[in-house]
Length: 449
Image 1 (cartoon, one colour):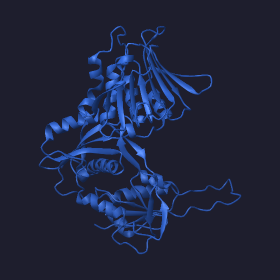
Image 2 (cartoon, helix red, strand yellow; image 1 turned 45 degrees about the vertical axis):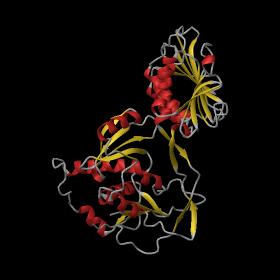
Image 3 (cartoon, one colour; image 1 turned 135 degrees about the horizontal axis):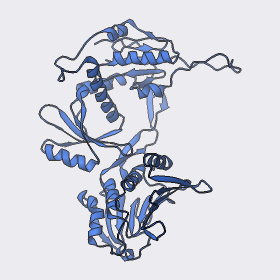
Image 4 (cartoon, rainbow, N blue to C red; image 1 turned 30 degrees about the horizontal axis):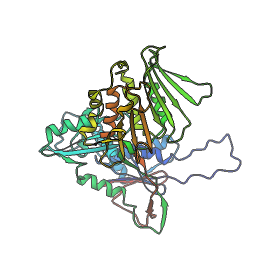
């Protein structure tokens, strides 16, 4: 079951428009895509859902088109489907009203769309004897890990976790015997929705570039993202930090209300230049206890882990007089050890390296006694710590809890990386598709079960 919407052509603009005459532009395709519609061909979008509620949401789309000043024609078949009263047989939550059932289904649809659009990464799945269960993590900054229960229109978020590691440990504890990596196989309903969305995708004699698709990667390979927006979001959410600008507006300072923690962000920097400096002080007028720097190309999820730790207010009062010992190093790198990162001794000290060799953390014990040494700790991605793609460096007394949070992010979390545009082949609709109902702005729609 699917529905189509066909947008009217964009009206031509006159050279001398009449300012008194209102002009109604058709809604942007992206607005409809945000509501679940997928582009099928030029000016044609398709709605294919896993809850079989296409008529209801097609009618909702028609209302929004009309509100935008667009003339909408609904075909008789679709209107009949919109007016039809139906419910799920043997629905497992019989106490729900029809509107409540639709809301449960819509939440399941949003989970399905988040997985399909790579916003929700599924780490593992299992079958509990009744239905499919899974565990995954939302990839936006600060995204929660979730435990999912059910399939299709009955899938729900049954629990949430603060990190992928916590979620996977809890999932494995209960479902170790049935646990399988990655998402579960597609259901018949999911395959039908994919087929409906791709009904126009056939080999064509014309090609056009498609939108670049982000790829899910380990956090250390993720794109840097928008650091300015990241800082703005942090300051908006944490009123205990006050924003200060330099006279040139090139740098923003975020200072904690205690005056003992300061964040500096330089806005216009290149990939390997230092863009962030964090410094902690025992008192507002004392010397620094510890400091940390990050380059401009540092992935946004890694910076998010850093800012989250600073917002928690944990570990600022590091004891300066105590030397960095084995316990400190073990605490800071425990997540890497648990994740199986390679542990080696080098001429510069101790190094932990990811299994793909593309990232690591280095501890240099020879500099650990120099309080203000900027690089006792080096976190990096790239060929090696001396030629990094990006790097975070930290002084000896940087809190081990902060370093552990960064280690955990590198070991378990993921981010996205923009891929190069691919070539996508499409063709114009050559014949009508009676199995696919339509709602059109200017031309029409229908549905069949």
